[in-house]
Length: 234
Image (tube, rainbow, N blue to C red; front, side, top):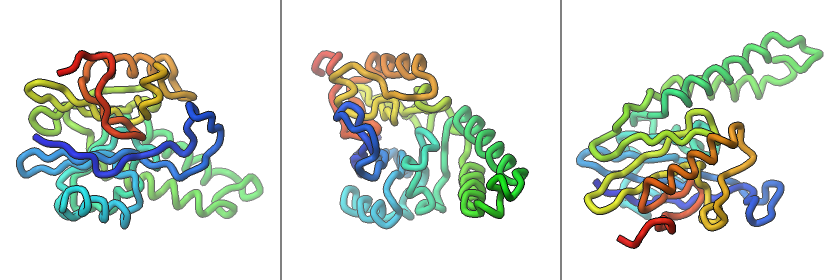
């Protein structure tokens, strides 16, 4: 089993750089995991055309070579290039799928039932289209099994979203954790700060601490791969 960073992500606004509003287009770090005949792409955050180019540049493969896609969350800038992999199997944690599905369905129902003078469908057809597209996309995502392949296991990291889930890659001498937004950047590690604001800060802090406790190498949600500074050299 091998892994490779396809694209290093970024935050639209980095709070630890004293940025309070978006100054760039955010996108998730994208990772490729190769195991036998399986090629698993994690968090396709770039637009499709850019992501196809990155796959060729970084791994010499095309989108058609990807067998599986795994989403650490259903955030829009984590899945921006997802439709590029229509022939692959899409995976997401069961909790994330259920919670997000209820939220989207509720938002769509509320929009449809609003009177026109309250901003209903006739006033916001574009929002209805976005919600319906999200439902269709989420419906195609399967509940991820506990192990995607041998030595690639789901690692729940709730807080930033209820069902956020990373992947733990187990090697003979070290472990690698694909963190998603549970640990966005190296500055969060250096300053010992979990991401915020988030829906569940207590859970986010617990996930942050658990990630640092378990892994030797960390693939950060909006940054590069780093050595866990709390671990001994290996």
